[in-house]
Each structure stands twice: as structure tokens, then as C-alpha cells.
Image (cartoon, rainbow, N blue to C red; front, side, top):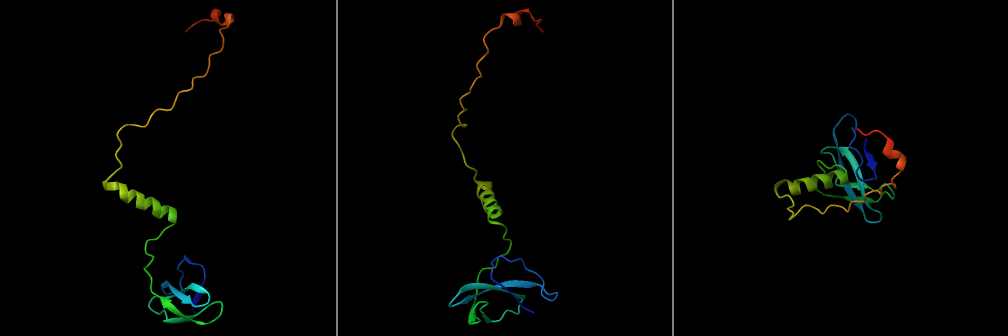
Length: 115
């Protein structure tokens, strides 16, 4: 059994209990599509899921350790600053303080006990 997927990034499910990999094929009329087959059994050509034309296999870099784009960006930024952190000349300026205006003095408050 071979599962054909058109959406890149589909999770690698089991096909009849075997470990599977995602292989990329390219149709001349409809572009790239992915084919999920057991590891080592990917054919050199596969039928396009839209038009059933013969599509050649594309050899791409393996997607090992790929997470979401946000997670990979965070990991890349962390690695970049691990050995050479950004150096600054001074601390950032303090924001202008906004004091709340005091209420006008009330003569009745003067008679209250003080701590």
C-alpha cells in the first residue's frame, strides 16, 4: 500500500508496519507532490495524483530534525548568539516617568492620626 500526499510536511505514518519516508516527485503539468513509501522502496517515477502522468523523482535534502518555522528560527538565533552575544555600549535609556498628580490638600486629612 502506498499513500500519496499532496501537502508537504505530512507526518510520516506507518505503511503496513514499516518505517516510511516522504519522497518528492515533480509532474510537468502540476508541479511537485510528495509520496510516502517504506524506506528504500521509492520508485524512480510515480503517477501524478491529479493527471496520472509519469513524474520523475526529485532528490532533495533530508528533513531531519525539522520543527516548526518559529522553533527553528529560535534555535538558529540561540546558536548564533551562544558564542558571540551582542555587545552594547550602554544600558537602554530609562523611560520617562509619569508621576500621578497629587490630589489637592484636604484640611480634614490633617486631623487623621499619623503612623
